[in-house]
Image (tube, rainbow, N blue to C red):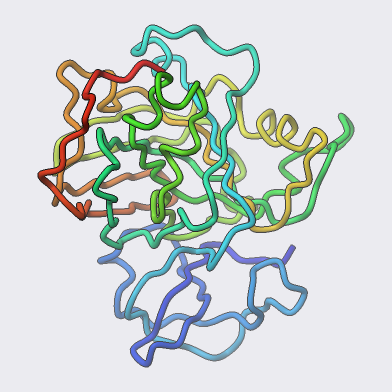
Length: 295
């Protein structure tokens, strides 16, 4: 895989899209209007993806991936998150998928369907696969297949995730269009050599909701990749959302569900910060059955 440090995908003032070398972690204000050296090639795993002498000015920050084959989600991967829901610790990773159209830019408004009731946030460390893998043998390091790391928000309609409506299948309530903003950069695994103790913070309208570290994961990144690759091909561009810590709205009493205009900011040390405003199609829509969710 080709060398980069902090990979940023962006649109310039003329509407052209580039990959550039950001030089470090940051947030929207740190990057806008910067002039970056750009890369050749379409995707970071292309053989011709190389840093060029050309430059471009950042007008809009985009998702670091234009598309993804699939987003793999991991449920209940933080001990305190399981405990806050009075749920047993899983013996194996709890897995679900989010569809490719769930991918969204790191600073976009998120369009919320009028029936995506009981809307919640989930701060997640994202792993980006950069080299195809399947059935990783014990002699191989799963991290060798990692392109890098990013930040994600696993936006969730708890109404549709509730087991009385989903039969325990999480993906539908988490897969509506634009329910997976990620960014702002991909940090190379050669730069972030240890993802096991990263600080994770979530603010909603400026108030802290989640405050934890990846040291609290039940299954670490190598274990997740090895498990996911068992009999399944993980292709370049695959995103693994590695689970969320405690502090989600679903397990608060009463649950402070996200509302129209709410702003969710998620920060992970060494990567930066994403920020998304929720934009409801119908802020006055009410679910026909508003029982609290039971995962």
